[in-house]
Length: 116
Image (tube, rainbow, N blue to C red; front, side, top):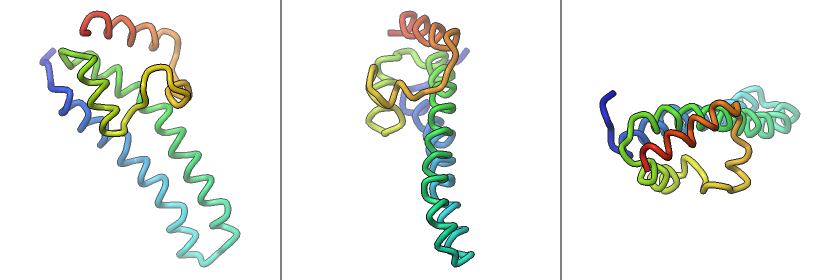
């Protein structure tokens, strides 16, 4: 498999993770505004936030595994992803909200050891 730079992997992550998040955050309030319904707005904001967080929790681990397989330095990738606000530091509360299987987590650790 061809190696890519950490910056290119982060760009893919931004497109795959952040762009849908912004859509999930923006669409419910826009719908509420167009409907001119304050009751809808009260539900739309938390629903959009919950949907965006759920998307982040599911998509970041999948992106990370994809990126770990393709970069030469996982450390450089982690720094670049954190600087781009794509991920959180290892062990943070928010990192613990990621949704992934044990097998997935083990594969991430294995790849991080192989490409430090």
